Image 1: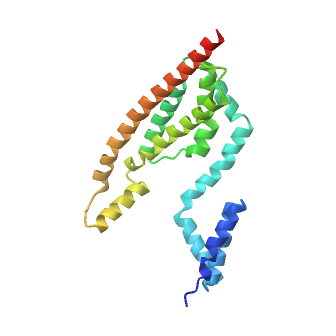
Image 2: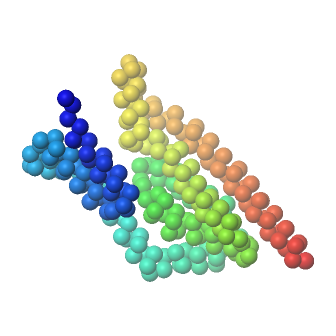
Image 3: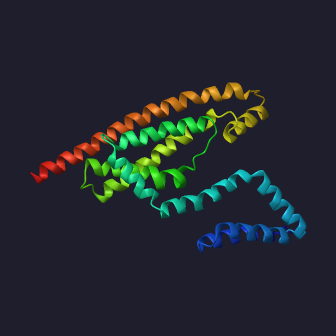
Length: 230
């Protein structure tokens, strides 16, 4: 008979997430319980957890970033960003988001992570884009504000997702190399990353066009509101 008790960890994670308990604590408890039901010694369980942490130690940087971002927001990072972009002349949503897109392209190409949505978009890029939209149209609607925030998130997605494989040491590129090698196709990383560049360039062009169309749409909304007031 198959012993299904080691699968209890899945249930613990599911219930823990449903109850919105501490994520790290839930995962840790699920791992320990799974190990005990699989008849592992506590020393073996701790050894596996330690080895997993060592292999993925860079992921812990994300945990360290969150308190720093929260502290910066507490002391007015968001308000400062809004004031900065409001003081800029000719600032627009398209310019702010496109500038951030180019920045993410460069950082992704050299393997540098800026923290993505929680560390950059939410506390900085989204408020700056929203402030730029307000400077153009002070009577911006709540729906338009949400659209601007979403567009700021799109700049992160385009900038990061379509440029990750340019970095020769990226996990995605290594995964592709492993799959190709297993299939009998010998590929070198020096050759593989070059093929990621056309996608990165195409995403820049597509986002630029999309940003311009979004900006024109916002300007039309502003003109229609001014005409209705007249």
